[in-house]
Structures are given as structure tokens and as C-alpha cells.
Image (cartoon, rainbow, N blue to C red):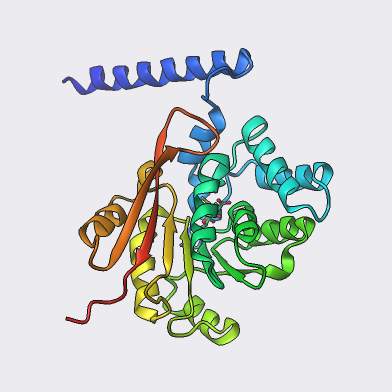
Amino acid sequence: MDPRRLFRRALAVVGVLAGAIAINELAGKPLPLRWSIFRSAVGANMAKTGQVGDGREKAAVAYVLANARHGDLDDVIRVLDDFARNRRFLMNIGDEKGPILERAITRSAPKVLLEVGTYCGYSALRTIRAMPADARLFSVEISPANAAIARQIWEHAGVARRVTAIVGMLGDSGKTIDTLRRDYGFADGTVDFVFLDHTKSAYLPDLQRIIETGWLHPGTVVVADNVKWPGAPDYLAYMRANEASLWQTIEHEAHVEYQKLVKDLVLESDYLGARTS
Ligand SMILES: C[S@@+](CC[C@H](N)C(=O)[O-])C[C@H]1O[C@@H](n2cnc3c(N)ncnc32)[C@H](O)[C@@H]1O
């Protein structure tokens, strides 16, 4: 097709989509279409800072402090869901996929949990709610600003003693992995649960880094969000290729957080241990 015609067609599609969203917003959002979900998905700012770039994460903290009961974990989760659904979209795991994460934690009763991708600390709250009372969560977050926001929210929820935010990334030439070993006692076979919810293209390399550390043991459960959207196709292919040999995976069909239009997949994978032969 003539490139100019193709461009005009693409412009028309964007125009129709923009019109539909605008009408939807003017009509009080009867459809699960929102600007903010598209903005947050494509925002260049996101890759640099881990935030959408319009101050919504700070606004979410203020909303929690003003509206959630201090020391009430359930209420803080409720208020964050309310903010993300009715005010501004947040890329939390959300209230449809969050229970999948919680059920996986309840099933495995982990003592040491590692999360990659803290954001505002929402999934950590759900994790803490489901994990045993003597368990501890370590959450790795690349953005210092997000780690600070999460700490404020955890403090308000009264759970700050049960979770530690570590600013860093697993792919930083060993710095963060060394910190986890040296300062937080990560050692062979000590990690019972892993939640992956960060840069989607980093899921597989980071899982491979975690396996190489020796921290996992047979029975460790790894949950990964957003495997369908935005999508981690190499991670999905890896889990399918290693089914029943290295991993046993349940694929949970769901929707992208806070709407019902875009489908998503959450993977819950039990580590079977390294093959000996
Ligand atoms: C989808 S959000 C996490 C949402 C959170 N788990 C929840 O459900 O409440 C992704 C987060 O991962 C962080 N991030 C992106 N790449 C990362 C990396 N390589 N290592 C650690 N954090 C990363 C971003 O800054 C962002 O805060």
C-alpha cells in the first residue's frame, strides 16, 4: 500500500480511538477505556523513571494518607484500588489478578519472598496479607522515588517491619544480588517465593540470574504478571518448553488491571529443581 495512504489509515484509527475514549470519559466512563492506561503504557517517561510522569504516584500516596485507616492493611488496598480504578490508573497488579498472587502465596506458605518491581507497594501489601506471620518480603525496585513512595504506603498500612525495599535491579552486574546476599541473608535454597512484575523483557534473564544464584529450591513458586500484556513472550515460551522438567506452570487467564477489555496472563510456576541427568 502507498505509505501515505497507510499513514492516513493509521491516523484515522488513532482518531477513532481518541474519539471513543473522549466520549467514554465525557459519559462517565461506561466502558473500560481510559486515556491514562494508554498513556502509562506508551509513556517514554516510564522507562526512565518507573513513573507515569504526571505525579499520579505522589497523588496516590496523598489519597491513601487522607482516605485509608492508619494501620489497616485491607483498607489501604481498598483505597489504592479505588484511586487506580476511579481517579488515575496505576500499574498495580490490581483487584482481579491480585487474588491470584495471594492464592499462590497461601498455597506455598513461603518464609522468604522476593519481589522484582515494587512501584507503589500495592502487590507487596497483598503479598504481606497472604504470607505467614513470620515471613519476610524483599522487594527490588529500580526507581528510588517509587521505593520511597512504597515505604510511605507500607508505613501507613502498619506493615513496614515485614517488608524491605531494595533500590536496584538484578541485572546490574551483581551489585543488587550481592546486597541481597550480604545484607539480607540470601543463600542457597533460601528463597521460597518470587514475584516478577518489572520490565517485561527482563523477566527471563532475571529468572535465569536468580536460578544461577542457587537461591531457589524444589518447591519455590515463581509468579509473573503481565505475561500476555504488555507481554513477556520469551518467558512464556521458556516456561512452556520446560514444563514438567524444570517447572510446573499454571497459566491464569485474566485481564489487565482495572478494566475488562484487554486480556492478560499470570503464570504461577513451581520450581522442580535442576535436572541431575
Ligand atoms: C508494573 S510496576 C510494579 C507493580 C507492583 N508490583 C504492583 O503490582 O503493585 C513495575 C515496576 O518495576 C520497576 N522496574 C522496571 N524495571 C526494573 C528492573 N529491571 N528491576 C527492578 N525494578 C524495575 C518500575 O520502576 C516499576 O516501579
